[in-house]
Image (cartoon, rainbow, N blue to C red; front, side, top):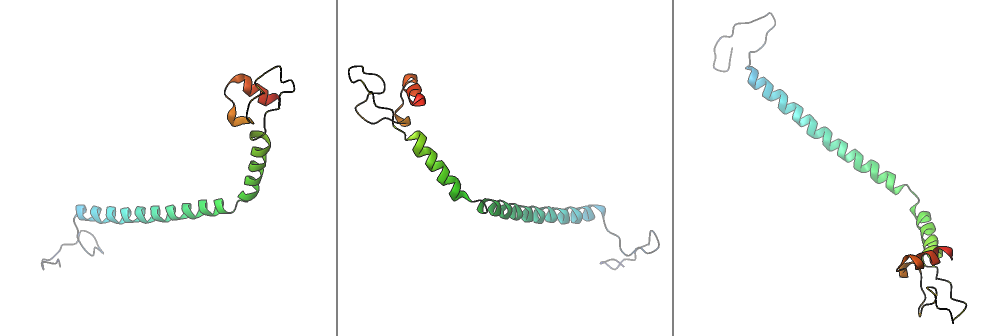
Length: 114
């Protein structure tokens, strides 16, 4: 019997109920959409934990110590002082020059050769 109390004729042996195809498709699509949303949320959580654990497991302090040492020895290294004050060159300046004070190619090559 239907909800309205009407008698339903069976299309095949073992049939329990009769539904409209549109309603059935709507139920199936809603259940699949819920699964996609749930799966997407679980995947996002997994990736966040995976990336977080991968980032936290690396020994970054030793890397930063090496970078700091290279920065001090290479970038902050001063230009060599000019030996002959009567011959002014790029190397002679009223202040101490390092890599950050390079203004042209001649100064760059002086810094590289030093």
